[in-house]
Each structure stands twice: as C-alpha cells, then as structure tokens.
Length: 270
Image (cartoon, rainbow, N blue to C red; front, side, top):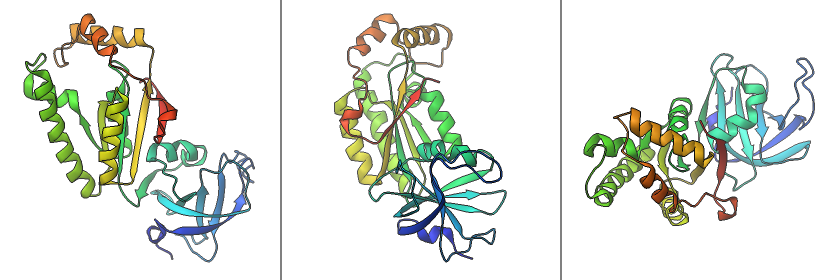
C-alpha cells in the first residue's frame, strides 16, 4: 500500500475517470471538479489512490499537477490527493469548499505539505472573530485575535493605544512564527484594514510559509455599526468603541479588492 503523504509537494499524473460535470454511476450526484486516480498505486481500500484535480475549469481525461494536500478519511481508510496547477495555492478552507459535494459524507482530516497562515480581513463588527474561531476548530489552527490579547492585558480603554497595540503585535508575530515552525496552521484575526497593512503582513507571512491566504469577510456597514455599539453597551469583555470611534476608524478602512493580487476567499458575515 502506498503512503499518500509521499506524494505531497510532487508533480503527479492523474487519470480522470469522473470528469467535471459527470454524474456518479451509483449515487447520482454531479462531480463539481475533475476526479480520478493515480495509476500503479494502491490505497487503503485496495483500489488505486484517488485524486481531486482543482483549479482547472474544464472536463479532463488526464492531468499532471502538483499535490498540495491529502484528504484522509478517518472512517473508511481512503485517502484523496489534492492536485492543482503548479504554483497555485489553495487554503484548507477553499479545498473543503470545492470537494464538499462528496467529502461532506465522510469524516476526514486535511494533511498539508507545509502549514498555512490565514489573514482575516474585514472591518469592526463584520464577524471575523466568529469565523476565525470556527476555522480554528475545523482546520485545525492556532488563532491569534489581537483585540482579545489587548483587552486581557490592558483593559477596555487603554492609554497610549498605538504603543500597546505594537507591543501586542510584536508578541503575536513571535508566537505565530514559532507556531508555524512547529508545523501548525495559524490564523491572524486582525482585520487588515489598509492596503499598506495587507502588503506588510503578507510579505512577513510569506517568509514563514508559502501557504498564505486572506479570508475577506463581507458585511453591511450599518449592520456592523449596530453590532459594535451593542457589544460596547452590553459586553464588558469587549474593547470600548463608541459611535464616534467607529466612524473615525471607518475612514481608515480600505476593503480588500481582488485586484490587489493576493490569494483570497470572500466570506459572508458570521
């Protein structure tokens, strides 16, 4: 039996027997991506090792690409390679989204060649932290939420905010670097409001791992404002942000645009 992890990071040839748009011969669901097998291998179920081909939007009969991950089914001993065009990075979140049409019926974990860093982008009240906590459980990953650490150390309304912000930021960068080196995924739940900040943190993250992706959360500003004001009023465990503060911060917010050229997935507000 082949060890599927040996293929990660390598170029693999796949024979496509269930191309994009075809129907499963027994269960009838439609294949939303190309799906096939690696000739000459044996998986845990005694059949040839299966593979999803992602990042190619046409039906194929065969394909050669790079294996960037392995989906390991924990309840039927049947690994699936994730094959993409060389140079394409897909996060665990994006892979799960594309293979959900079939993998939703199986318990599984994602094995990666190298750990990933996820940069949560969006404004106050967008639901970034709720999604970050969800990804923390599901990926799994180690989450660093700047506001939580700031609140814990300095309280709701700290003096010298910018100085203390940088202190927490320096701490997070050190801890995140150590976490990635240990082989674990990292989530930076910051917001990354400006193009300048996104560029800065993307460069820094890429020095730690090639697998870096923005997760841009989308939300109506009026909805976000209402959430933040209610939070400030009702929850003593949140940083103090009144309406004037919200509107002042909003002037600094530059929504992430696909034209910035980063790997990004756009997510609805939690």
